[in-house]
Image (cartoon, rainbow, N blue to C red; front, side, top):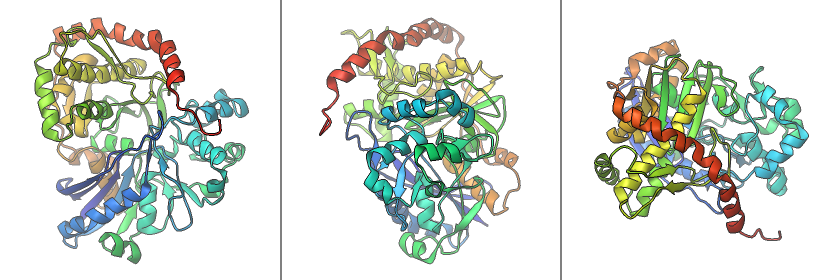
Length: 497
């Protein structure tokens, strides 16, 4: 039976997952690594950690495949700035998606291109989150390294290059490299790239997510243990692969990623609201979504108490389950790393409101769960709910029944859970199967994705959250000025500045 390997280069770990032709997970392994924060608002990783993870885990997965490996697909975190030389060696640490350093570059783009023009071409607003802003920061701030750059890659294309020697990107990721991607032509916009000083040859070739881009080279096989000659499929952004892996490929359902990053994704919805993100699904459909820091908030909170194991999160869940909705008057803003949708403020910061002596760890943790849920509700309200009937939650946070119940009650929408192995890895494996013809169309993902029965909103609890939501929705605007002042007061001195 043919088997398909999904490699997902995530923010906190690289995961290798093996699936059969029916979408059943055969084996899975992961290798973790940290996010480095050298300054407030910055986030970096050594790309070599990603390839080392593949080389560490590859032999185990190759052994589990038993000679039946038919194709590999690589997905990953995005948008990033990963400059490499002609041998694929990184010239600096990767600038991650949650990095917000490129604030001056956003102003530069507004002055030299204009917000309206960039939106007309790319479909997205100007912000330090997007790939083009990060690339411009790299060119302007580190010109000596830029001069040595052969390609600027993403996390998955870095790994795919080391597997195949080919540098590619799919439209789901290219669409988040605003303003460089042209949503009409589906290619890099030469005129905008010229203004940014980015030669087109520095950018990877745009290929469909299901396209076979090459095969595992003999050198790669020796390094990572995966069979030489195995076809490698282009792959896509982790968010789009996750949406596919949730079995969500049309209107009426949304996918909810609950990893470090949280995304609420609406495939087939063309919504031009500038507060949201706009790109392409791996299937080629329009894809509108909102992104917030989700599991990253939970990881931060658990870390305060020295916990990181799944069992510790289960303990926190058990404690939070005994706290009433609303956390007894405690409210949390989840802006630990600035925020994307809907506020688009790199200087936003987290906050607890209503803290008193009666609040303990369980109250604070439930408030964190509720705060992220309220952030997703803001996204949902902007879409006008888009005929939404059900949300499918995936990734690590979906394991929490307490969090899924909070989400259902805050959003007022049934929340189901993708099966074990669903999400990004399943979507990537499906792309691998599609690339080599083991499946013939995207609609067949329905046979792979097993969705649990949904948790329904509790009407009285939803009504309670309806009372709290306006307070949450108005809190950021009231605190923004003070956040800006505190950021100014605590900003580190810049050498030579």
